Image (cartoon, rainbow, N blue to C red; front, side, top):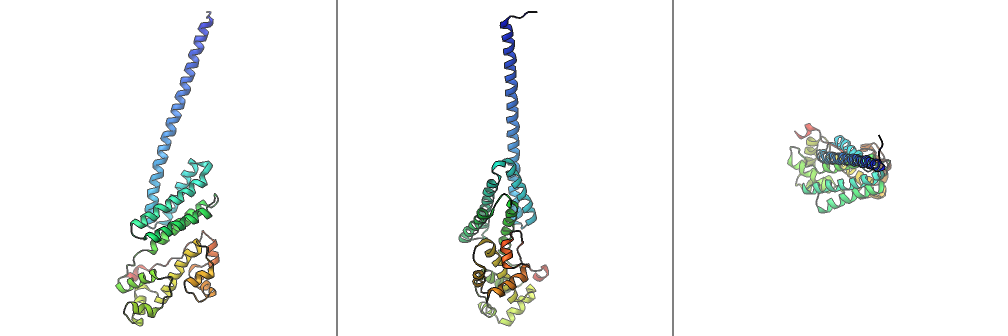
Length: 276
């Protein structure tokens, strides 16, 4: 059967039109699938973010670290060409969210909240690289939990001991002397020393030292102050003594602790039995 040229052109046109419609349909299908995938990713992302904040404020460090790694994976997969920058921005946003919630829960005043957030931003911007993004994320979680736990109100069963602990926490950078603390609370030195050890299992002198070492870790990790200056700031008699005491409690020299971001913080906890 012969076809006129015009018939062939018409048939070709039908094929061409059909081909274009199929191509357009495929594009719509791809676009729909991509849209659905983006919605799914966004939903997962915000679910993980809520979980992350809950883990942090419940001091669930390992769960918080795992959840943060999941968020980092989403960002890396979604923006592969700029994943490091995306993670950097997210860490800064995360620090702001944590700071804001600490402020709302009255764990930080305005000045401390600003300092805390600025410290996190400096840590992120000065240290984050593609190679250490996970390590920096772990360090931030460690720091958040450290600050949160530090601001826990003591719950020992002796009011004076609780108040003394809060006093030491507030004045940890000052030169703290047992006799002066006893005067502050209108009790004798011997009585204060006795009840403090009875309810905490450590002497008052040792607890003062413990709190100073805990606080010093922040200055070593997040400031560029010289170790000798930090030792002086916390009223250690000399750098050699400071190094010896610091290593006793943390297992590291101040220099090594400063360089090794993967090292955990030393943090003292009262035994559960001590609060009875």
